[in-house]
Length: 160
Image (cartoon, rainbow, N blue to C red; front, side, top):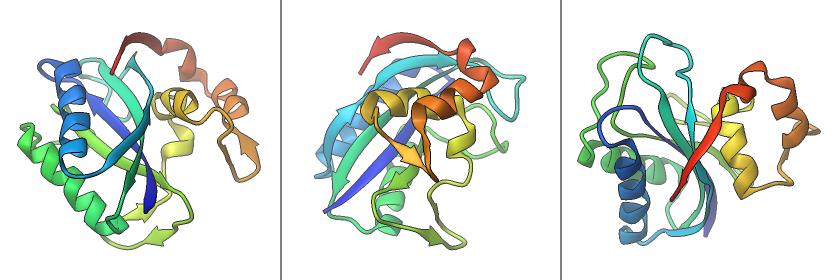
């Protein structure tokens, strides 16, 4: 059984409904959602001329290998009207494996840990809900969040 930390995001349509649908569909696929964070409204990152996002993180256990788990996430995205037209652009649903316990991978299809997760407050703030003692490369998540200037713009808005 593998343990995956999955970032969920949406900034189109009924954003909260898309996040909740993703968790429901993960469970229906046979995965176990161990814990889920609160939902946070966050400013867009990368491409900033778009609506605010709702973001969350879930700790998910699955029998699937990382590449197959990523394929499942992409199937769930597609079932929820996700299109990939603009890099970092608006989307109904974005599901990313940000970290997998005991797994490192660097392929054309999948990189683990996610190459940007430690730089993104919109990932780390909800990750802290799920794993308050998380650390990466010798730095605690609390210390890392405090060092990110955009963390102050993130606000809790709902629960999953």
